[in-house]
Picture 1 (cartoon, rainbow, N blue to C red):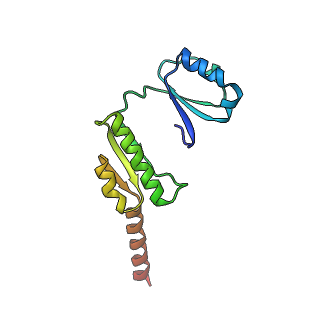
Picture 2 (cartoon, rainbow, N blue to C red):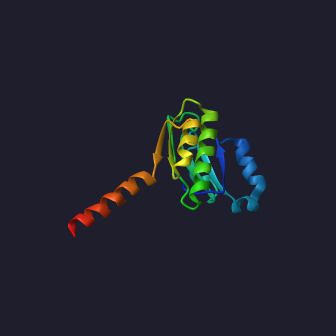
Picture 3 (cartoon, rainbow, N blue to C red):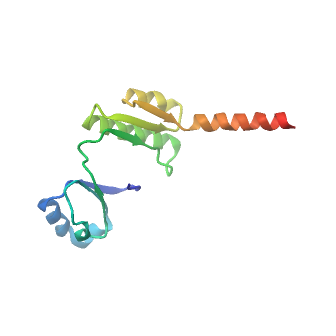
Length: 139
């Protein structure tokens, strides 16, 4: 699993990618790179600044898009919906689960093709309500 942002994703490993990385040399080491490939066996040959994920990016069965905790709720929802649209554009049949933080964007996520929406605020609000009233009843 890779958790991060502001990174370059490279899908597939071949001689062209190897040459591209060597052309950039030191300047590329300042960039976070995630490499996804199912054929590469000798990952110890990769530069240290490359995070490697072994897998086939062409055949995902489902996606789970979570909200970015470093962004305001509105922006996190917008970015989650944009990620969903990009994924559905690549593979319209992919089963998608999307975390949405604000109630107004639940409809937008559904319009964008979300199969399931996790509305994180709702269960927390219910729990807070339950705790509030259970405390009053104890007094």
